Image (cartoon, rainbow, N blue to C red):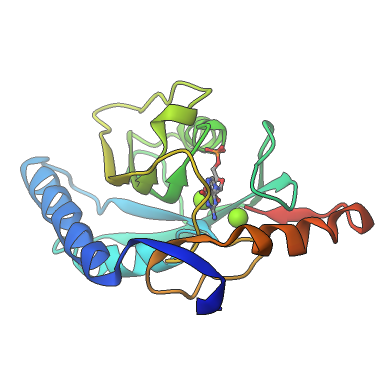
Length: 202
Ligand code: 5GP
Ligand code: MG
Ligand code: MG
């Protein structure tokens, strides 16, 4: 697996330092926000699972945690423009402050769809905490709800990255750092593509 990595973009040490800074910001912002009920941290499966677990262990106020799953047709490095909710929340978020935890915001289509969905469930505010952000590739303006804020770990250049929860064809999620794959590794899977048209979770 490590042999497939062309270069490391963020090491596990750099990631850990940045996640601590993000948690400090959230701890501060939510300490000044007088709220009677615990905010709900909603991780977007599968990609956000590593970031979510690192982040919530640094949060010092009471929270609930839930997961949501979004699907999109495609198996390569692009998501399509019409994501749908394939597994919904277990918790009721009406009148709750929600922090949506994402691995990476690319076009913004997935996030916009999720925000619309959580807004329709009556969340009183929706913040976004994304590990990576690729603003250069944005196609949709991400509109937060209420006093929601946008938190991001790192700004990511427009290329495709893997590791720290993020996959290519469901592999590499368990790498403790973020890296770029060698070109041959994308090819190996793309050559299998014409045989399968898969409905995958992004
Ligand atoms: P969007 O809907 O913003 O275009 O895409 C969001 C989703 O696409 C992310 O949550 C992630 O699952 C996937 N994605 C976008 N860019 C990358 C990337 O560079 N690497 C990986 N592994 N997934 C990405
Ligand atoms: Mg994601
Ligand atoms: Mg993916």
